[in-house]
Image 1 (cartoon, rainbow, N blue to C red):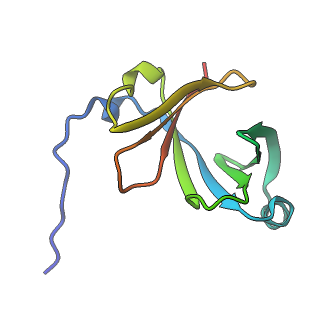
Image 2: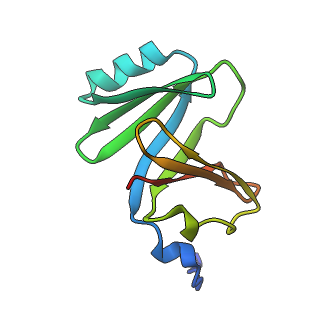
Length: 125
């Protein structure tokens, strides 16, 4: 018989997340990945360079995908959550990188506890 585990956490993070902002995928060929997403109805939203990596944001309805081209071995996927304020999540994780202000006005903070992929928190206003 399977058991269902339910978290009883009252973490301050639980009430801070507004929504899933995007799912990030690392790809070796940005143009080829872009082609396949566009063929399936995604549209361009934005392009940017982050730490010498080309990044492309594509959207389809409410789904946003970030494609990152890199030649460096890195995690293949990350999740980004929109929060009203980065101060709500600062200090909750063992490893934190940031915050950084992007050219488009977003403030971002990368966080990790150890075994899960990096989580990106984004303040858009």
